[in-house]
Image (cartoon, rainbow, N blue to C red; front, top):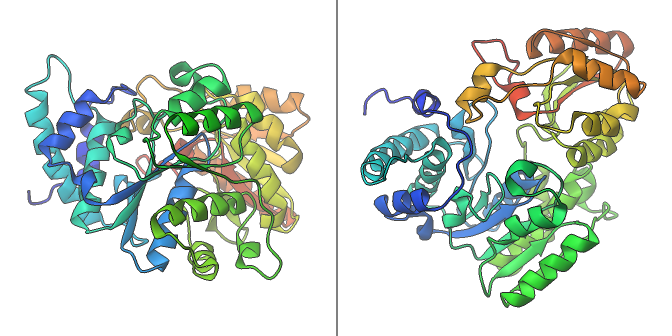
Length: 417
């Protein structure tokens, strides 16, 4: 279709939000000829670290001579960000895949009784088709929400990665870490491999039991430090843990991993919204930490990232997130914070109808109770402008964090990465 705009089409779909279940996705996959079966896949589930690990797995496999890719979610500015092939987006191929998937979805919808393929399901199927058409040999597939009923659970993975477990999306996945872990571990295929990142003792025991029950090999990864003389010393903060997890996961496909090739590949990665530098003079960093565990990891990385310079925060948080917990983890690391809302149009377009942001004034009150100084701004763009001016005056840096939606460009009002 000449002039087909994948972003415009996907954003035009009725944003019904999360509608878990595999029946629609299986029908859509079958209509497309199951493109996800044409490449080896590694399923990446967990609360935090999924995108970073997925990008790293693909980069490590690529460095060993295999055409590799990954499917990610969510995106920050463009839907095509969700598919990376040999380290790059493929916007034209992705757009054509979205068009073909839209045709397939029409056929599936005609057979469904009052239901329709969701926005996320269509985007996920299009991602699988893009990877297949690009001829990748192996792909890391990041789960969207949970695992058991997530659209990505339509792959026949050779390995599953559980990066971490925290209390997030509790309305869908359960109120405890064990319940959430159970939903995510449900994707583990029998007689494959489970790569387990740093988790609580309770979750670790559940993972061990699940692996035993399904006759799976279990690789447990502890939190590593930088190795003397090793390239991992150039991998920032908590990404060293993600690197160790990704290296083990890539080994499930490669068999043997060259440490040097792996370190060089990952050190060269720029991962959108994960300790990503998006501006200079003063330095501006983006990190999409949106729960206390992610904020804790970010806080631990800031001194190394900024060289101990004062850090000015730009923070926006969704209403259903643990704002007090997030701010408590960041309070000791920030000099001052500019609180802002999130673009409503982005919330709707990305499948979160009815979602809202915490009011900046509410965040300011929470911060005051933590001894953290701050102020408010009407939009992410104006908040960033104010934070930059403060950072310039004090020789500091800026960190934007709290939500993926903080970076959404909405009619030019969002800063974008």
